Length: 620
Image (cartoon, rainbow, N blue to C red; front, side):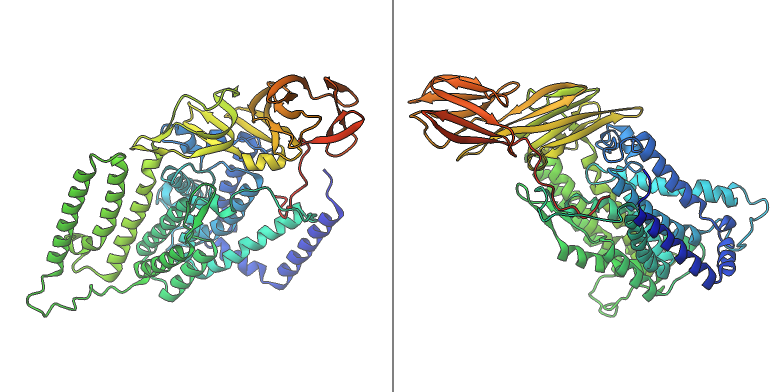
């Protein structure tokens, strides 16, 4: 596709701006500074990571051929019993917009972190240390160690995510956390730079937007689908890694710089996000709790990074009857252990005992954390326990707890039976449409605590992949009238098109059906109940009912059926006694009429035509 005039103008303006910046700024000095830390001044690890992610999307997920409908289901971390998903979840993305968002952040924050870490040993910037081994080789650090660290972060956040995960954002948030600690000012600037790159990308790909005044299809808010748990875990992993690096290099940044960067970056990038489903189709965002928690976490992180090395205070040390800090910690630990044991014993006879025990264990670990530092041996603490050591130990323990919270949800199992009878099989996938059904989806670690929710929409299941999900909600399909579901795996790709067709009956609801089209064959997956015309016509009642492959008109008098005919094709008629039915197709939508004794009455309109275009502000 040839670029538009507006796109050419944008490219020219960007070239002009870059030229002005190069002419005005000291390019040689800037490049020399980059070369002191990076091979030839290039963040090779970031570039290689971006190339791998883009290649995976374009090739493995078939994004090059189907950019708007990539293959995703095969690459989601559905369960610990599906290893392929665990390995690929951090590499795959749900859409082009999803990919571009993560790549933009990776380019900015990856370059910041890679420059901070450096391709050269810190004591000899700009050159390798002779005979220092592979770990100090600039090329190994650039094209092996740095990308490997990012992919490990993506893997860990996928393995320990709270439910199925997809995308590189866990690693992106690890970069955010690392940059906020190791390079606070650059991290704050990186947030602005990342947003600016996003705007430039949108200006290039969608230079002109046209939108109507229609509202979109009913669907959950955007924040309801964000992997907030993986983001928090990634952020914590990045923070812990940055603290470890700063201690290894004996670098202690200014506390206020770190605190400002953690707070500003975390608030803007929604590290505070805490979401949980409510009743039915509602979702709850605990913004107040999330922000308060994150502000407290920012203080702990700052103390762990740049806090004082003074010992913990002992305000009551002069009071004789007050036990020592070690004794208080031992008593607290003992009391919590007894309470936890009683909780385990008392919950054994309760349905879903494992779930109760798991929650109790998480609470036990969190409450035990304050007691651990005083109980550590002096050989580990180097003497008296300091404020900075305590904060760092608590931060590491909290990171472990955040990771472990997601473990029980990884032991997910899906039953063999798929709801409904009108399913289509594609490889190991089963695609169907159902309403108000429950799934046999359970957590092995928590018997009796499986998903008992009801589902409406296009469902995709795979016993081999422990997969059961709603591919398209019923409300969205009702609005859009059709959708395409892409399924596949490594080396193969197929689609199933779902079409919702029906007739909206005068004075009543819509009689509709959902057809699934795959490989040229159509399967009627779902049929609604019939819809009866509210009016009585010539002492007869008329009802439209979906059948196995079409729709028919049923006529009755005094609750007794007197005949039925299929809905006529355009320019044709069907009769039941003296009732004559015909469809006028030159109107939008097509309209069904009945004629009797010279009187013609409209009784239904076709509901198969796609609804009006919703408001769209992102062409992605």
